[in-house]
Image 1 (cartoon, one colour):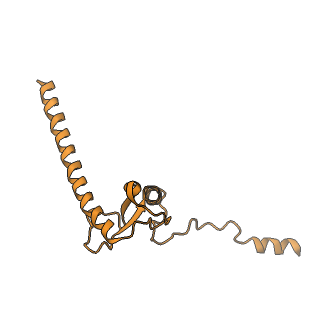
Image 2 (cartoon, one colour):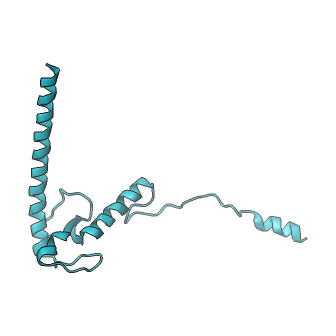
Length: 128
């Protein structure tokens, strides 16, 4: 009996994953088509131009990283080539992981320790 239950759970999991992927593809298709109508077919970072067959290499990047934020005017989107898009997300993930500033965030001081504090006083004592 446990095998049958595992098979049912596995099948249900597969169906759920397929459904989520279909919904995501439907959503992406909608805003991608709108973005391609709104913006010129040029990568916003590197300036590479796209047309015809290589248009599939141009992707829609959500500036606030929220894929559900799709305003009709496209103010949350920018078109990036796949290479610049990967770079943008890598930078964002690296900033989260390193506890450093996120892109557009405030920069925190790296250290508060001052290695040479009081050195001038020591050097003055030595000269005298």
